[in-house]
Image 1 (cartoon, rainbow, N blue to C red):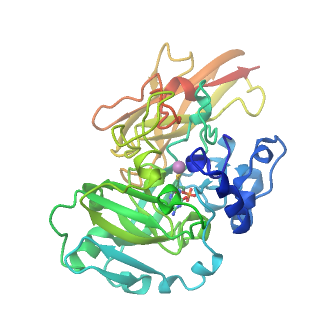
Image 2: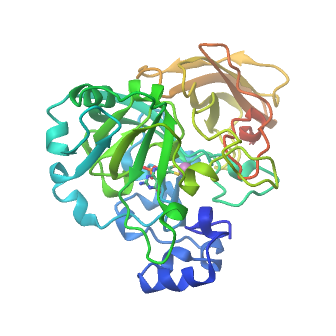
Length: 402
Ligand SMILES: Nc1nc2c(c(=O)[nH]1)N[C@H]1C(S)=C(S)[C@@H](COP(=O)(O)O)O[C@H]1N2
Ligand SMILES: [Mo]
Protein backbone atom coordinates (compact mmCIF):
# COMPACT_ATOMS: atom_id res chain seq x y z
CA UNK A 1 0.00 0.00 0.00
CA UNK A 2 3.01 2.22 0.20
CA UNK A 3 2.38 4.04 -3.07
CA UNK A 4 -1.36 4.48 -2.80
CA UNK A 5 -2.48 7.88 -3.91
CA UNK A 6 -4.81 7.80 -0.95
CA UNK A 7 -2.06 6.47 1.23
CA UNK A 8 -2.76 8.97 3.94
CA UNK A 9 -6.40 8.26 4.66
CA UNK A 10 -6.58 4.89 3.00
CA UNK A 11 -6.19 2.75 6.08
CA UNK A 12 -9.28 4.40 7.42
CA UNK A 13 -11.45 4.23 4.30
CA UNK A 14 -14.61 2.24 4.56
CA UNK A 15 -15.22 -0.64 2.21
CA UNK A 16 -17.70 1.43 0.21
CA UNK A 17 -15.18 4.12 -0.54
CA UNK A 18 -13.23 2.37 -3.26
CA UNK A 19 -16.39 1.91 -5.29
CA UNK A 20 -17.37 5.53 -4.63
CA UNK A 21 -14.02 6.58 -6.04
CA UNK A 22 -14.42 4.27 -9.01
CA UNK A 23 -17.84 5.76 -9.70
CA UNK A 24 -16.31 9.22 -9.57
CA UNK A 25 -13.79 8.18 -12.23
CA UNK A 26 -10.96 8.19 -9.75
CA UNK A 27 -10.30 4.47 -9.79
CA UNK A 28 -6.80 4.91 -11.18
CA UNK A 29 -6.01 6.99 -8.13
CA UNK A 30 -6.58 4.13 -5.78
CA UNK A 31 -3.90 2.04 -7.53
CA UNK A 32 -2.39 -0.83 -5.55
CA UNK A 33 -0.06 -3.37 -7.02
CA UNK A 34 0.31 -1.45 -10.28
CA UNK A 35 2.28 1.33 -8.65
CA UNK A 36 4.74 -1.15 -7.20
CA UNK A 37 5.91 -2.41 -10.58
CA UNK A 38 9.48 -1.56 -11.50
CA UNK A 39 8.76 -0.65 -15.15
CA UNK A 40 8.96 3.09 -15.86
CA UNK A 41 5.49 4.50 -15.47
CA UNK A 42 4.13 7.15 -17.82
CA UNK A 43 3.68 10.71 -16.61
CA UNK A 44 0.06 11.48 -15.66
CA UNK A 45 -1.73 13.83 -18.08
CA UNK A 46 -1.69 16.89 -15.83
CA UNK A 47 2.12 16.60 -15.59
CA UNK A 48 2.66 15.29 -19.12
CA UNK A 49 4.89 18.28 -19.89
CA UNK A 50 7.57 17.15 -17.38
CA UNK A 51 10.87 15.89 -18.75
CA UNK A 52 10.61 12.09 -18.38
CA UNK A 53 14.40 11.70 -18.42
CA UNK A 54 14.83 13.77 -15.28
CA UNK A 55 12.08 12.33 -13.10
CA UNK A 56 11.03 9.07 -11.48
CA UNK A 57 7.27 8.50 -11.73
CA UNK A 58 6.28 6.62 -8.56
CA UNK A 59 2.55 6.99 -9.25
CA UNK A 60 0.08 9.39 -10.85
CA UNK A 61 0.39 11.65 -7.82
CA UNK A 62 4.04 11.20 -6.84
CA UNK A 63 6.85 12.22 -9.18
CA UNK A 64 10.45 12.62 -7.98
CA UNK A 65 13.40 14.54 -9.46
CA UNK A 66 16.39 12.32 -10.24
CA UNK A 67 19.40 12.96 -8.00
CA UNK A 68 21.56 13.27 -11.11
CA UNK A 69 19.24 15.95 -12.56
CA UNK A 70 19.62 18.69 -9.93
CA UNK A 71 22.44 20.47 -11.76
CA UNK A 72 24.40 23.32 -10.19
CA UNK A 73 22.37 26.42 -11.08
CA UNK A 74 20.37 26.83 -7.86
CA UNK A 75 16.89 27.05 -9.39
CA UNK A 76 15.02 23.83 -10.15
CA UNK A 77 13.33 23.99 -13.57
CA UNK A 78 9.60 23.23 -13.34
CA UNK A 79 9.83 20.48 -15.94
CA UNK A 80 11.73 18.37 -13.42
CA UNK A 81 10.31 19.68 -10.14
CA UNK A 82 8.76 16.93 -8.00
CA UNK A 83 4.97 16.58 -7.70
CA UNK A 84 3.00 15.34 -4.74
CA UNK A 85 -0.80 15.26 -4.66
CA UNK A 86 -2.87 13.82 -1.85
CA UNK A 87 -5.95 13.97 -4.08
CA UNK A 88 -6.30 14.16 -7.86
CA UNK A 89 -5.80 17.78 -8.95
CA UNK A 90 -8.85 19.84 -9.91
CA UNK A 91 -9.92 20.17 -13.55
CA UNK A 92 -7.37 21.93 -15.77
CA UNK A 93 -9.97 24.57 -16.66
CA UNK A 94 -9.18 26.36 -13.37
CA UNK A 95 -5.88 27.62 -14.80
CA UNK A 96 -7.42 28.93 -18.03
CA UNK A 97 -8.45 32.27 -16.50
CA UNK A 98 -6.25 32.44 -13.41
CA UNK A 99 -7.30 36.00 -12.52
CA UNK A 100 -10.89 34.82 -12.00
CA UNK A 101 -9.97 32.32 -9.27
CA UNK A 102 -11.54 33.19 -5.94
CA UNK A 103 -10.27 32.82 -2.41
CA UNK A 104 -12.22 33.45 0.78
CA UNK A 105 -10.35 35.16 3.60
CA UNK A 106 -11.66 34.59 7.15
CA UNK A 107 -10.52 35.56 10.62
CA UNK A 108 -9.90 39.18 9.62
CA UNK A 109 -12.00 42.19 10.62
CA UNK A 110 -13.57 42.44 7.13
CA UNK A 111 -13.75 38.87 5.84
CA UNK A 112 -14.46 38.54 2.14
CA UNK A 113 -13.89 36.68 -1.08
CA UNK A 114 -11.25 38.09 -3.40
CA UNK A 115 -10.30 37.23 -6.96
CA UNK A 116 -6.68 36.82 -8.00
CA UNK A 117 -7.24 39.98 -10.06
CA UNK A 118 -8.04 41.86 -6.82
CA UNK A 119 -5.15 40.24 -4.93
CA UNK A 120 -2.78 41.58 -7.58
CA UNK A 121 -3.67 45.15 -6.54
CA UNK A 122 -2.81 44.58 -2.86
CA UNK A 123 0.92 43.93 -3.01
CA UNK A 124 3.71 42.11 -4.79
CA UNK A 125 6.71 40.17 -3.53
CA UNK A 126 9.04 37.49 -4.85
CA UNK A 127 10.70 34.81 -2.75
CA UNK A 128 12.92 31.83 -3.49
CA UNK A 129 12.10 28.81 -1.33
CA UNK A 130 13.04 25.21 -0.88
CA UNK A 131 9.86 23.29 -1.62
CA UNK A 132 10.32 19.91 0.01
CA UNK A 133 7.95 17.09 0.86
CA UNK A 134 8.28 16.14 4.52
CA UNK A 135 8.60 12.53 3.31
CA UNK A 136 11.74 13.35 1.30
CA UNK A 137 14.35 10.85 2.53
CA UNK A 138 11.69 8.34 3.64
CA UNK A 139 13.32 5.82 1.29
CA UNK A 140 16.34 5.70 3.63
CA UNK A 141 14.33 4.52 6.66
CA UNK A 142 15.15 0.83 7.22
CA UNK A 143 11.70 0.51 8.83
CA UNK A 144 10.09 1.11 5.39
CA UNK A 145 7.32 3.44 6.56
CA UNK A 146 4.21 3.51 4.38
CA UNK A 147 4.21 6.28 1.78
CA UNK A 148 6.35 7.05 -1.24
CA UNK A 149 10.00 5.97 -0.71
CA UNK A 150 11.45 9.30 -1.89
CA UNK A 151 15.22 9.52 -1.60
CA UNK A 152 16.37 13.11 -2.29
CA UNK A 153 14.19 14.21 -5.21
CA UNK A 154 11.00 15.33 -3.44
CA UNK A 155 12.50 18.80 -3.21
CA UNK A 156 13.46 21.75 -5.35
CA UNK A 157 14.45 25.39 -5.07
CA UNK A 158 12.02 27.65 -6.89
CA UNK A 159 10.92 31.27 -7.13
CA UNK A 160 7.39 32.39 -6.31
CA UNK A 161 5.67 35.72 -6.91
CA UNK A 162 2.46 36.86 -5.30
CA UNK A 163 0.95 39.08 -2.66
CA UNK A 164 2.31 38.95 0.89
CA UNK A 165 -0.35 37.49 3.20
CA UNK A 166 0.29 40.34 5.66
CA UNK A 167 -0.78 42.83 2.93
CA UNK A 168 -4.04 40.94 2.50
CA UNK A 169 -4.62 40.96 6.27
CA UNK A 170 -3.90 44.69 6.35
CA UNK A 171 -6.31 45.40 3.46
CA UNK A 172 -9.07 43.50 5.27
CA UNK A 173 -8.75 45.45 8.52
CA UNK A 174 -6.30 43.26 10.42
CA UNK A 175 -6.70 39.98 12.30
CA UNK A 176 -9.54 39.36 14.70
CA UNK A 177 -8.47 38.54 18.28
CA UNK A 178 -7.54 35.04 19.38
CA UNK A 179 -6.32 33.45 16.14
CA UNK A 180 -2.98 31.70 16.72
CA UNK A 181 -3.22 29.69 13.48
CA UNK A 182 -3.28 30.33 9.75
CA UNK A 183 -5.33 27.63 8.04
CA UNK A 184 -5.33 27.04 4.27
CA UNK A 185 -7.79 24.83 2.37
CA UNK A 186 -7.13 23.25 -1.03
CA UNK A 187 -9.65 23.57 -3.85
CA UNK A 188 -9.85 19.93 -4.90
CA UNK A 189 -13.21 18.36 -5.59
CA UNK A 190 -13.69 15.82 -2.83
CA UNK A 191 -14.89 12.33 -3.69
CA UNK A 192 -18.53 11.62 -2.83
CA UNK A 193 -19.41 9.26 -0.04
CA UNK A 194 -16.37 10.06 2.08
CA UNK A 195 -16.22 12.23 5.20
CA UNK A 196 -14.73 15.50 3.85
CA UNK A 197 -12.48 15.80 6.91
CA UNK A 198 -10.86 12.50 6.02
CA UNK A 199 -9.61 13.73 2.64
CA UNK A 200 -9.64 17.54 2.43
CA UNK A 201 -6.18 19.09 2.13
CA UNK A 202 -6.37 21.63 4.92
CA UNK A 203 -3.39 22.62 7.04
CA UNK A 204 -2.79 25.00 9.90
CA UNK A 205 0.52 26.69 10.74
CA UNK A 206 1.39 29.10 13.54
CA UNK A 207 0.10 32.54 12.59
CA UNK A 208 3.65 33.94 12.88
CA UNK A 209 4.36 32.16 9.60
CA UNK A 210 1.97 34.61 7.89
CA UNK A 211 4.69 37.24 8.20
CA UNK A 212 6.69 35.81 5.27
CA UNK A 213 3.88 33.89 3.53
CA UNK A 214 2.63 34.65 0.03
CA UNK A 215 -0.48 33.95 -1.96
CA UNK A 216 1.42 33.18 -5.15
CA UNK A 217 0.35 33.05 -8.79
CA UNK A 218 3.77 32.76 -10.44
CA UNK A 219 6.43 30.00 -10.28
CA UNK A 220 9.87 30.50 -11.86
CA UNK A 221 8.55 33.36 -13.99
CA UNK A 222 5.37 31.72 -15.30
CA UNK A 223 1.80 31.34 -14.09
CA UNK A 224 1.78 28.43 -11.63
CA UNK A 225 0.83 25.29 -13.59
CA UNK A 226 -2.02 23.14 -12.31
CA UNK A 227 0.42 20.44 -11.16
CA UNK A 228 2.05 22.91 -8.77
CA UNK A 229 -1.10 24.51 -7.44
CA UNK A 230 -2.17 27.15 -9.93
CA UNK A 231 -3.98 29.46 -10.22
CA UNK A 232 -3.17 30.38 -6.60
CA UNK A 233 -1.00 28.75 -3.97
CA UNK A 234 -0.17 29.49 -0.36
CA UNK A 235 3.61 29.63 0.09
CA UNK A 236 4.84 29.33 3.67
CA UNK A 237 8.61 29.81 3.36
CA UNK A 238 10.64 27.52 5.59
CA UNK A 239 7.75 25.09 6.09
CA UNK A 240 7.56 21.56 4.70
CA UNK A 241 5.70 21.06 1.41
CA UNK A 242 2.34 19.95 2.79
CA UNK A 243 1.78 23.37 4.37
CA UNK A 244 2.02 25.05 0.96
CA UNK A 245 -1.60 24.65 -0.10
CA UNK A 246 -2.21 24.34 -3.83
CA UNK A 247 -5.30 25.75 -5.59
CA UNK A 248 -6.06 27.49 -2.35
CA UNK A 249 -9.73 28.46 -1.98
CA UNK A 250 -9.84 29.53 1.68
CA UNK A 251 -7.33 31.19 3.97
CA UNK A 252 -8.58 31.50 7.54
CA UNK A 253 -7.03 32.81 10.73
CA UNK A 254 -8.35 30.42 13.30
CA UNK A 255 -8.48 29.87 17.06
CA UNK A 256 -7.71 26.16 16.58
CA UNK A 257 -5.83 23.88 14.24
CA UNK A 258 -7.87 22.27 11.46
CA UNK A 259 -9.58 19.02 12.41
CA UNK A 260 -8.95 17.55 8.95
CA UNK A 261 -7.20 14.20 9.13
CA UNK A 262 -4.22 15.56 7.15
CA UNK A 263 -3.67 18.01 10.04
CA UNK A 264 -4.83 16.08 13.11
CA UNK A 265 -3.42 12.63 12.34
CA UNK A 266 -1.17 12.66 9.30
CA UNK A 267 2.10 14.56 9.03
CA UNK A 268 2.70 14.04 12.76
CA UNK A 269 5.94 12.80 14.32
CA UNK A 270 4.35 9.74 15.92
CA UNK A 271 6.70 7.05 17.25
CA UNK A 272 7.19 3.94 15.08
CA UNK A 273 4.02 1.86 15.22
CA UNK A 274 2.09 4.76 16.73
CA UNK A 275 -0.89 6.61 15.31
CA UNK A 276 -0.43 10.32 14.69
CA UNK A 277 -2.52 12.67 16.78
CA UNK A 278 -2.46 16.33 17.85
CA UNK A 279 -0.19 15.47 20.79
CA UNK A 280 2.66 14.71 18.34
CA UNK A 281 4.63 17.49 16.65
CA UNK A 282 3.22 18.48 13.27
CA UNK A 283 5.44 18.56 10.22
CA UNK A 284 6.00 22.30 10.07
CA UNK A 285 9.46 23.88 9.82
CA UNK A 286 12.02 22.37 7.45
CA UNK A 287 15.06 21.16 9.43
CA UNK A 288 18.65 21.95 8.33
CA UNK A 289 19.75 19.55 5.60
CA UNK A 290 22.14 18.92 2.71
CA UNK A 291 23.06 16.16 0.32
CA UNK A 292 25.58 15.48 -2.42
CA UNK A 293 24.23 15.25 -5.97
CA UNK A 294 27.48 14.42 -7.77
CA UNK A 295 29.26 12.12 -7.82
CA UNK A 296 26.41 10.07 -6.44
CA UNK A 297 27.38 6.55 -7.39
CA UNK A 298 24.61 6.52 -10.02
CA UNK A 299 26.89 6.91 -13.01
CA UNK A 300 29.43 4.10 -12.47
CA UNK A 301 33.06 4.55 -11.36
CA UNK A 302 34.53 8.05 -11.04
CA UNK A 303 37.88 8.78 -12.69
CA UNK A 304 40.75 9.02 -10.18
CA UNK A 305 42.26 12.48 -9.68
CA UNK A 306 40.62 15.81 -9.18
CA UNK A 307 36.88 15.54 -8.42
CA UNK A 308 34.30 18.30 -7.92
CA UNK A 309 31.91 17.04 -5.26
CA UNK A 310 28.74 19.14 -5.34
CA UNK A 311 25.28 19.25 -3.83
CA UNK A 312 22.68 21.42 -2.12
CA UNK A 313 22.35 22.68 1.46
CA UNK A 314 19.66 24.64 3.27
CA UNK A 315 18.80 25.83 6.72
CA UNK A 316 15.06 25.40 6.11
CA UNK A 317 13.35 27.88 8.41
CA UNK A 318 16.65 29.71 9.02
CA UNK A 319 19.43 30.77 6.67
CA UNK A 320 22.30 28.39 5.94
CA UNK A 321 25.64 29.22 7.54
CA UNK A 322 28.00 26.60 6.11
CA UNK A 323 28.34 23.07 4.86
CA UNK A 324 31.12 20.55 5.35
CA UNK A 325 32.05 17.53 3.26
CA UNK A 326 33.58 14.23 4.29
CA UNK A 327 35.21 11.75 1.92
CA UNK A 328 35.69 9.13 4.65
CA UNK A 329 32.13 8.46 5.74
CA UNK A 330 32.03 11.19 8.37
CA UNK A 331 35.30 10.55 10.24
CA UNK A 332 36.79 13.89 9.13
CA UNK A 333 35.13 16.99 7.70
CA UNK A 334 36.25 20.03 5.71
CA UNK A 335 34.31 23.13 4.80
CA UNK A 336 32.84 23.22 1.30
CA UNK A 337 32.57 26.37 -0.82
CA UNK A 338 29.12 27.83 -1.47
CA UNK A 339 28.66 28.61 -5.16
CA UNK A 340 26.16 30.61 -7.19
CA UNK A 341 23.84 33.40 -6.09
CA UNK A 342 22.44 33.62 -2.58
CA UNK A 343 18.68 33.85 -3.15
CA UNK A 344 17.83 34.49 0.48
CA UNK A 345 17.35 32.58 3.68
CA UNK A 346 14.63 30.25 2.39
CA UNK A 347 16.51 29.15 -0.75
CA UNK A 348 19.09 26.41 -0.89
CA UNK A 349 22.74 27.02 -1.69
CA UNK A 350 24.75 24.89 -4.03
CA UNK A 351 28.12 23.84 -2.63
CA UNK A 352 31.28 22.36 -4.10
CA UNK A 353 34.22 20.56 -2.53
CA UNK A 354 37.28 19.89 -4.65
CA UNK A 355 39.06 16.68 -3.72
CA UNK A 356 41.99 14.63 -5.01
CA UNK A 357 40.74 11.07 -4.93
CA UNK A 358 43.10 8.17 -5.71
CA UNK A 359 41.49 4.91 -6.82
CA UNK A 360 39.43 3.27 -4.11
CA UNK A 361 36.00 3.22 -2.53
CA UNK A 362 34.72 6.33 -0.76
CA UNK A 363 31.71 7.28 1.30
CA UNK A 364 30.95 10.94 0.56
CA UNK A 365 28.83 12.87 3.03
CA UNK A 366 27.78 16.46 3.62
CA UNK A 367 26.68 18.21 6.79
CA UNK A 368 24.99 21.62 6.90
CA UNK A 369 24.84 24.16 9.72
CA UNK A 370 22.26 26.96 9.92
CA UNK A 371 22.89 30.51 11.20
CA UNK A 372 21.70 29.56 14.68
CA UNK A 373 24.25 26.77 14.87
CA UNK A 374 21.83 23.87 14.33
CA UNK A 375 23.90 21.07 12.81
CA UNK A 376 22.50 18.49 10.45
CA UNK A 377 22.42 15.35 12.61
CA UNK A 378 24.04 12.00 11.90
CA UNK A 379 20.85 10.10 12.64
CA UNK A 380 17.24 10.49 11.54
CA UNK A 381 14.47 10.87 14.12
CA UNK A 382 12.60 7.58 13.93
CA UNK A 383 8.89 8.11 13.32
CA UNK A 384 6.00 6.05 12.04
CA UNK A 385 5.54 7.71 8.65
CA UNK A 386 9.13 8.53 7.78
CA UNK A 387 9.01 12.32 7.95
CA UNK A 388 11.71 14.97 8.34
CA UNK A 389 14.72 12.82 7.47
CA UNK A 390 17.78 15.09 7.54
CA UNK A 391 20.32 12.47 8.63
CA UNK A 392 23.68 13.08 6.94
CA UNK A 393 24.55 9.39 7.26
CA UNK A 394 21.39 8.38 5.37
CA UNK A 395 22.18 10.82 2.57
CA UNK A 396 25.84 9.79 2.19
CA UNK A 397 26.83 8.17 -1.12
CA UNK A 398 29.25 5.33 -1.78
CA UNK A 399 31.37 5.84 -4.90
CA UNK A 400 34.02 3.77 -6.67
CA UNK A 401 37.01 5.73 -7.94
CA UNK A 402 39.08 3.96 -10.58
N1 LIG B 1 -4.33 21.46 -2.36
C1 LIG B 1 -3.25 20.69 -2.14
N2 LIG B 1 -2.13 21.24 -1.71
C2 LIG B 1 -1.04 20.49 -1.47
C3 LIG B 1 -1.09 19.08 -1.65
C4 LIG B 1 -2.30 18.51 -2.11
O1 LIG B 1 -2.43 17.31 -2.30
N3 LIG B 1 -3.35 19.35 -2.35
N4 LIG B 1 0.02 18.31 -1.37
C5 LIG B 1 0.98 18.88 -0.44
C6 LIG B 1 2.22 18.15 -0.32
S1 LIG B 1 2.21 16.78 0.68
C7 LIG B 1 3.37 18.59 -0.89
S2 LIG B 1 4.84 17.84 -0.58
C8 LIG B 1 3.37 19.73 -1.82
C9 LIG B 1 3.87 19.30 -3.18
O2 LIG B 1 3.98 20.39 -4.05
P1 LIG B 1 4.31 20.15 -5.57
O3 LIG B 1 3.41 19.09 -6.12
O4 LIG B 1 4.13 21.48 -6.25
O5 LIG B 1 5.74 19.70 -5.65
O6 LIG B 1 2.09 20.31 -1.98
C10 LIG B 1 1.31 20.33 -0.81
N5 LIG B 1 0.09 21.07 -1.06
MO1 LIG C 1 4.45 16.12 0.97
